[in-house]
Image (cartoon, rainbow, N blue to C red; front, side, top):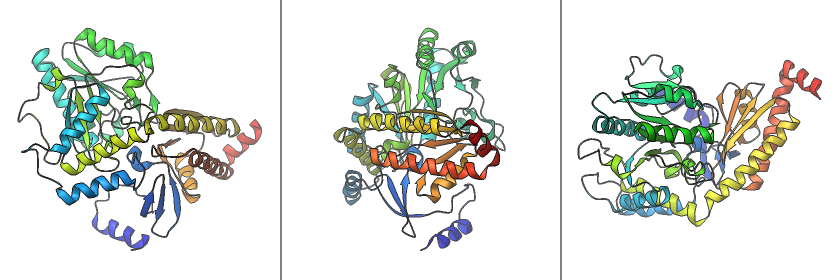
Length: 411
């Protein structure tokens, strides 16, 4: 099947709720993809920070094949050996006590919201149900996680949304403190706001939030759906900041591309969920749990968390050097291998120009590119990606008279 046939079939039979790029892939290996026509791309999207081990990593391929040859699904009516193993590894790496498995980041955050509400009613009173969240956050697309997402663009057409979320500016501790009251049960924050253009939390802000939660007797919850499992150069972003959250949500890179999410919690918080309070038919099934084990084992065996820190530093350094040469670049931000580049030109045009040159990046805002390559990306691939990006920027700037004139004047 060629690309045109795939596009035709998708437009004929699928819901049209995605703005898809006219590109379809045949195979991948590491940080590279090949489309149906055989053209090679450097993949600095990684399925939106999902393909942590890269494409077709032998350890993940083998784990999935072995598990599928035995059994794929039995449901949580029974004990699942692979699920227990995956949970043990997450507990050992995180320092938290209990794990609940689901299928996505939205489901993980949905479960955390339910957990916080039940905990609040048990520990603070029947009216304690509100959660403090941030403007420009993103927590998912279910109704509750949409209501917790601080971007009105995602809300339009789905009102009325569930109540119980109080929005405050990100990186503003005083605003968060002012929002906490008798009806508050938790604070839910991303340590790095990924969908808003990779906005890192200030370390003092995040530590201040934790202290605020301790003083007020409410839960400190971190959405690490995008930042967890090595992406920031630490096993979890909260470890970079020296934090001890009560609840952490994970997904994306956790299964290396196999759909899986997880909620990690301290013992006394997890204890408020009893049988029947929450569940998932597919959550933590043998196949997804085997994927989690393979990912965690491989990250450790190949020292990919440390690699992500070192290569992420190289990527950011190369991009900052690029910014010094290219006036259309206004800022470079990042933590580990989650990096953003702010531009004076349209990010979508630069994304398209990169793609034409064999590099996949993601325009997350009108003037912001996000780069989130697999954790196995090499230094050589980083260097090549930055060279392609520079060529793309020059091409777009040349087509934008205002940007080109400004660049010439500044030179």
